Figure 1 (cartoon, rainbow, N blue to C red):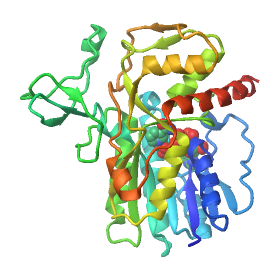
Figure 2 (figure 1 turned 60 degrees about the horizontal axis):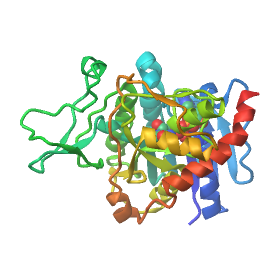
Figure 3 (figure 1 turned 90 degrees about the horizontal axis):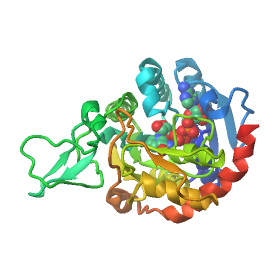
Figure 4 (figure 1 turned 120 degrees about the horizontal axis):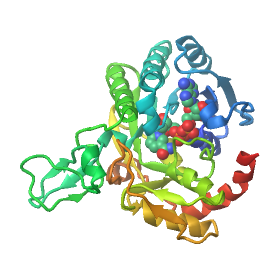
Length: 364
Ligand SMILES: NC(=O)c1ccc[n+]([C@@H]2O[C@H](COP(=O)([O-])OP(=O)(O)OC[C@H]3O[C@@H](n4cnc5c(N)ncnc54)[C@H](O)[C@@H]3O)[C@@H](O)[C@H]2O)c1
C-alpha cells in the first residue's frame, strides 16, 4: 500500500538515506521532509536538499509548533519517522535547555500536530541506546543488573571499571542491552531521548497510531557529517586521520561500542514502518557485535591507507561516556525479521572510501 510519509530530521545522515530507501521500496509514496538544516550538521550556508520526485522538503524547526502543524496537515501522513534531534552527548551538558527544547518539546509539538490528523497509523522514533547508561551486566550468580555510573575521581586514578550495586557477586561481565533492562540515562542527551520515548508511548495510548521505538547503537557510514565535532566517532576519527593528526584514544582504548552501518539502520526503520507491531514496542538495533575503540581506530586507519599506529591512548575520559555498548538484536529479528547485512569490516571500507573524497570538500 502506498503511504504518505513524514520524516522529521529527514535531511540528516540517517534521514536522507531513509528517503532513498522508502522511494526504492515504493516509488509511488509521497514523502515530506521537515528539517531545519542545523548549521552544526549542514554548515552555515546549506543548499536546499534535492530529493527528486515524490519528496517535498520543508525547512522548519520542531520547536516551532505552528510550522510543524502546517507540514503535518499538508502531508496527512500514515507513517511518521521522528529523527530530528540535537545529538551531541557532550554538548548536551553545556546546552541542556536547547537539548530539552528540541528533543523533548519538539516531540510534544509533533504529538499535538499529529492530533490534527486522523490517518496516522505509525510513529517510529529514532531512539538511542544512550537510555541504558552503563548498560546491562550479569554477575557470578547469573543475575542481570544495570551498571552504576562511573565517578570522575575513580576514572582519574585510571580505574575505568563499572561500579556494581550492593549484593552483586563478582566477577561480572557486560551483556548486550535489551528492552527488559531498566533505563539509566547518564547524560542530558540520553535523558531527552528517553523522554521522547515516554512522550510518544504515553500520548499514543488511545490514539489511532502506534509508537515504535528503535534504540540505535553507534551509527556510522557514508554521509555522516565530517564537520560536526559532536557526533559520530568514526567520522570524527576519519577526518582526523585524513588531516594527519594523531588519534587521541580515551581511557585505556577498551571502551566497546556496537557500530551499526547506516543502511542496516535504515532497513530497520523501513521495516518498523511497515510491520504490524504493538504500540510501545521497543527494539534494539545494532550489529550485535561489540568492538573496542582501539581496534576500530586501527581498522579505520588501515582502510584509509594509513599506518595503524598513529594513535595515543591518553587515559583521558569524558563524563557520561559509557564503557560498553552492544545491542541484543533478538527482538528486531523476531518481530520484524530484521538482521544486519553489512559486516563491520565491509562498513569501515565503505566509510573510508567516502571519507577520502568528502574530506577535501569539507576542508574547502
Ligand atoms: N547517529 C547515531 O549514531 C545515532 C544513534 C542513536 C540515535 N540516533 C538518533 O537518530 C536520529 C538521527 O540522527 P542522525 O545521526 O541522522 O543525525 P543528523 O544530525 O545527521 O540528523 C538530524 C537531522 O535533524 C535536523 N534537526 C536538528 N535539529 C532540528 C530541529 N530543531 N528542527 C528540525 N530539524 C532538526 C538536522 O538538521 C539534521 O538534518 C536522531 O534522533 C538521533 O538522536 C542517532
